[in-house]
Figure 1: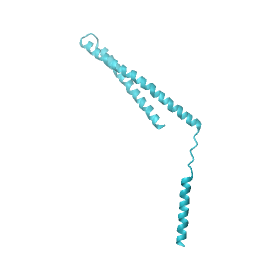
Figure 2: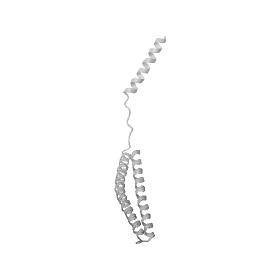
Figure 3: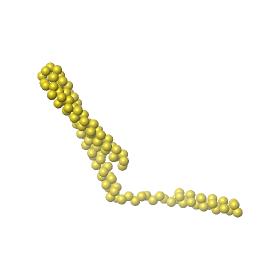
Length: 118
C-alpha cells in the first residue's frame, strides 16, 4: 500500500510542477493613460534637467566673473581708490552667485532622483 501512496504523491507533485512551468504568467494590464502620463513626466523631467544644466553653466561663469571683480575690488581698496563698502558688496555678490550654483546643483540632483524612481 505504501508504494501506491508514494507513487500517487509523486505523480501529483510532478503534475503540479508541470502546470507551474507551462502556465504562462499573465502580463499585468497597464492603463494606457497612466503609461502616457508617466512617459510625459519622464520627458518633462529630462527637459527640466537639461535646462538646469544650461543654467548651471551660466551661474558658474557668473561665479568666475564675480571672483575676478572681488579680487579687483580688494586691489583697488588697498590702493585707496574705493570704499570698503564696495568690497563688501562684491563679497555679497560672490556669496549670492555661489548660492545660485549650489541651489541649481541641488535641483539637478532632485531631477536625477525623480528619474531613478521611474
